[in-house]
Length: 307
Image (cartoon, rainbow, N blue to C red; front, top):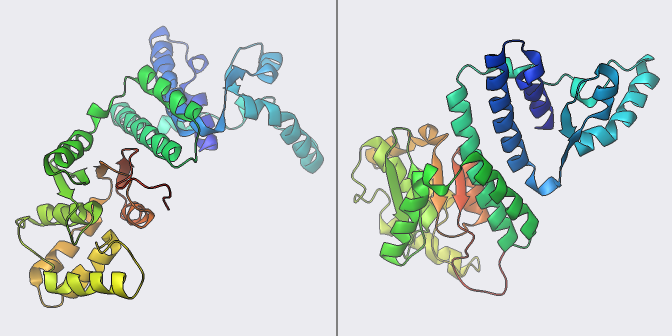
């Protein structure tokens, strides 16, 4: 990530251009890039500082991150020991900044950056709730959001999941599908919110009525009974991976279930948001499917201990 950031910075740096208009455009792009990097590294305590090596070598003021500046003498010494000389005169020189020429649609890249900033914010809030991050990480991400003009409104799944949770009084989730439509899912006695949302999204993409049961209760109930009766689980509801296994079994006798399975590959790149922190199993499955997930920093149940 840091290497990619360096390559992009060199491309976007205003010193690369002579035309004033291109310099101004590069400055704006550099600002967006710095915001995205700060959001991605909020927990690393990076700070911007003037690159003294670049200033000494070229007489030009450039900005780099403190860790890059601090480690550069070590890297330069390693190069000299290995090949007799260091090919770089400063951290800013280090192959940085050519990848930006590969950007063919800046608007798309900026939209993706804003969505990533929002996801990083929710991740920071969840990690704070779990005791894995401190308050300063969240505060830094909030500042990045303010600078980039990012609010939860840019992701329709956020409002949809919270509205569904309020209307049903149950944990809920929402997903933005490739066509821009939004589907929701809520916790039920047999399915968790993430499993229900996944099924509803697949039904929508396959053109199947969401009220139709692709997996009959006669299939789900024995699995739930085994979880609680034999495996020691307190929660009888099926996780997302368990639902997909049940769906695959149903597909042997139900053509509609088989049709829904074929839509799994089309979920890649979708945005999903949940009104509560989902389980690690569900989060990992969504990630394997390529779905971008965020959660409110709230547990489904109040307890002194959470996994």
